[in-house]
Image (tube, rainbow, N blue to C red; front, top):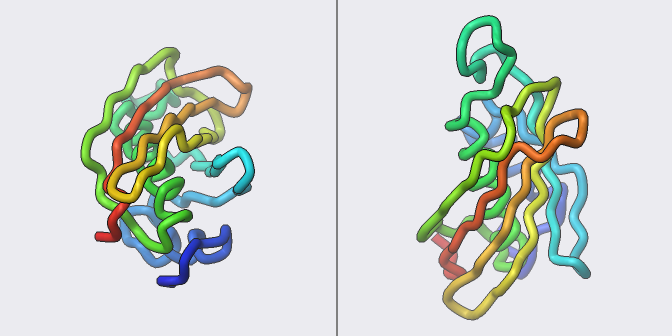
Length: 140
């Protein structure tokens, strides 16, 4: 998969082959190379529940989703997985629903570093969290 850039099928293959990401059941919905966006869906699993009976996604799982999607916004352009350098997140609303949709937008990409903003929405379109990641633009 070390071509110059990754397409949705190649990213999905990486997702499916990763023990962690495949457990999360992430699914690439779309890639927009013009707007520098990638959209990924994560379905609800009972293992993701914050507190029993709440049907709320645990914030750690939301964080992981946003970081992974941010990473792959850069990875798509670089042809492989890149390391996270720094990441911050704001949890806006409880993430409750049948799935979450994470949309990553590249804000800056230089030879050595990339900056990505990611929004996570629930199945009703409610904004649940916003994250910003700084990623190495060097494969690793």
